[in-house]
Amino acid sequence: MIPLRRILIWISGASAGLGAALAATVPFENAELVDISRRGGTPGTQHVAVDLADPDSWPVVDKDFRQRIGDGEPAMVVFIHNAGTLAPLGPADRVDTAQYTRNVLLNSAAAQVLGHSFLSALDGRDCEQHLIMVSSGAANRPHEGESSYCAGKAALDQWVRTVGLEQRRRSPGCRVLSVAPGTLDTDMQALLRSADPEDFPETVRFRELEALGRLEKPETAARAIWSLLDRDIDSGTVLHLHDLTYRYH
Ligand SMILES: NC(=O)c1ccc[n+]([C@@H]2O[C@H](COP(=O)([O-])OP(=O)(O)OC[C@H]3O[C@@H](n4cnc5c(N)ncnc54)[C@H](OP(=O)(O)O)[C@@H]3O)[C@@H](O)[C@H]2O)c1
Image 1 (cartoon, helix red, strand yellow):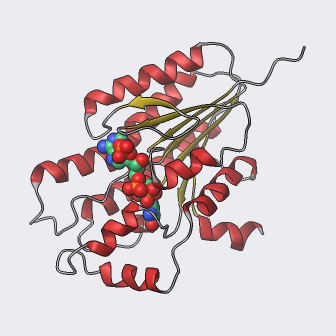
Image 2 (image 1 turned 180 degrees about the vertical axis):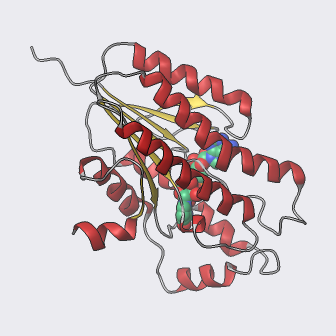
């Protein structure tokens, strides 16, 4: 009997929104799928229950990477770091310090530390390896009221550019990408629309987008993200899903 290829997939923030859509559209039948989030509950996933804004949770995830990768010979490993938060919305000089600290830890620090953990757990293994960071157009375009979110996504993009170059020197190496998914109909968007325009002036634009039916379904973005696994894209590339239509279709 031919053994099944062992495929390991971690998705952070698979309990809701784009992460749940990624879990629902995994393009492999036999993948071992792990949700790294606080709530969990998404069908078909094993749950690593952690608050990624708490640095004490990062070694828990590191251990999970190492245990599962070490437990047999995976043919393919994928980590999609998707968890993110907008809270607190508001100008940097007015928002709550504790919430602002959590935003910086989750959006900026956790992404880099978990990315490092994943690559380190792979430790030169001879298998197909993918690390995808979910970014945002906010990495390039300043949105008043979202300073630590914009800064976190910009940091994540530059981390991917740098680590992508490093991984090109490895054989087989991990293909490291950053992808901005577009404007999606999720709880995060609902939060943007409910914001006070004083704290977050762009709320007006997001309300208009919803009224015009211009929000993308998270499942559509999720399928496009999965399609990246098969596309010929260099490690270290930072892209927007809109680029795929332009560049590849
Ligand atoms: N929606 C958009 O229009 C849009 C646009 C550009 C980029 N993005 C990016 O796409 C990604 C997903 O966004 P979304 O719209 O799907 O957001 P969402 O609906 O708010 O879901 C966020 C996910 O992140 C997890 N998460 C949040 N804080 C966490 C924490 N402290 N610890 C662990 N997990 C945490 C949540 O899980 P728990 O609550 O269970 O922990 C949830 O599964 C984010 O990186 C976001 O920046 C979204």
